[in-house]
Image (tube, rainbow over all chains, first blue to last red; front, side, top):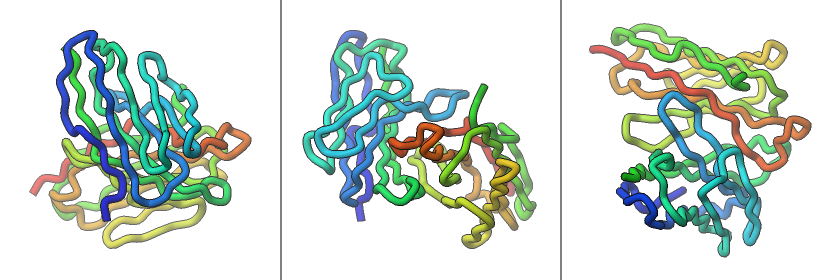
Length: 115
Length: 114
């Protein structure tokens, strides 16, 4: 009954450090997404994946990389963290469906602070 | 221009009041989603609808496709309903929806006082 699990939940990084956020889903969903949530803004898409081994850029991809080596996992990497990447990060997954009208499932979020 | 607009941005209500949150969108959609986010918490899907009306407990969601408008109603509001409510749309294929992405509103922060 896990759904979408994100690790870690909290992290503080120094400018220039790197880290990887892990998203794992146990629902066999094809589509997975990484979003960031900033005050006063709606969630914005960083990168997404429509299946194992495929990734694509979203609205705000700069400074991030992703990988989806296994269908259930979607990793978000920050190679050299910057204060502008301080945000709350959400992972989401959906299964494919007719006209894409399928429910989205979200993780609990990762609160990242870059100092 | 935001493709998904919500109103109001903030809403304070007394326990027991009837609450309405509105969402307007400007793109063609395959579905509209209402989501709930408690302080410091994750995001939970409340409804997904593409026509008409859905009800779950004290929550009711309606959508008017022709007017590109949806409302979320909460009847007999309770302090535990305090949360941010987010409207999101799945764009239709001819609006770039092939990757299954959602376009989000900025959210409505609801506070219900006892």
